[in-house]
Length: 135
Image 1 (cartoon, rainbow, N blue to C red):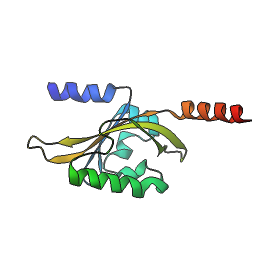
Image 2: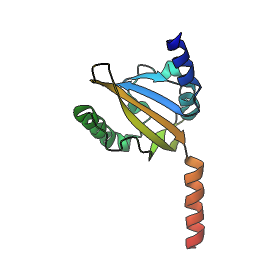
Image 3: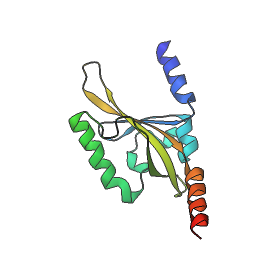
Image 4: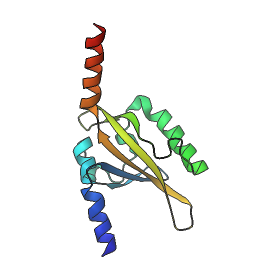
């Protein structure tokens, strides 16, 4: 019962929730992830995280990912960060993300979870306001 409830909660939260194992393979993808990235769970599950990471950010992402797995600590420590992501259409999104390491009962890191929300409109609005102000 609890596992079913947990799955429904994760699937129904408003933010995208993506879980990947230590290899960076996506093993959890909720409905909000589908809405945000335009990629169904069937398309995302079993795929590498590169599916949603713009090519120019991949090296930095994997460097941070590997460091977090190796040290068991994340540089951002749960603080939200603004980054870019890829929509299925190829369009680049601005997203705000938080990350956490996931550990097994013995404390070993088994993967990483990210929560994401689309902030593209806000960022573009702020950029337009700055440009108008500087004109």
